[in-house]
Amino acid sequence: MNNGDQAANFIYLLGVLVLVASALMVRRIPIRQGFKMLATWILIFLAIFIVFALRSDFAALGDRLMQSVQGTATPVQQGETLRIRQALDGHFWVDTELNGETVRFLIDSGATTTSISSDTARRAGIEPSGGFPVIVQTANGTVAVQRGRADRVEVGTIVREDLAVHISDGFGETNVLGMNFLSSLSGWGVEGDWLILRP
Image (tube, rainbow, N blue to C red; front, side, top):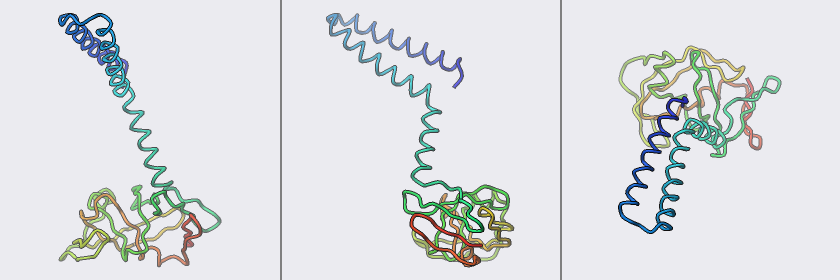
């Protein structure tokens, strides 16, 4: 928020406080009780002003808290292997380059095929191959999907080309890196709080 917006908000809140004070005076409330009520209103409006003035900071804090819950999505390179730390939600999340677009994926060995939302497919330039939708079973129920292919998938230094994907609005905002990616590796497994990927 710029200084002009802050000044306008401050003037607006000051005007509201003047109205509240005027109302208290018209009602002829005893001075001590009036001061208590005015102080309460001042604190309320001050809190509102602070929330408005710092709303972008609160949003950034919320994003940082969500990242701490979901865990860092950046893989750690150790020699040729990649290590991905488990998030507090018990899952493994990773930022992946999908046709040059950065996309956050949940790594799920229970998913046969890598699955992406329709919005992610549009951003990454992945077109459905056409034909009739395929019905797949997910943790959230049955979903109708379109087939497609990703030209390039990069997880850290691991690169796979022409990877089959399922595309559907039914996946919501969660993109899943499935077994067709994991089975292309020479090895993978969980060691403590880390998922280890070997190219």
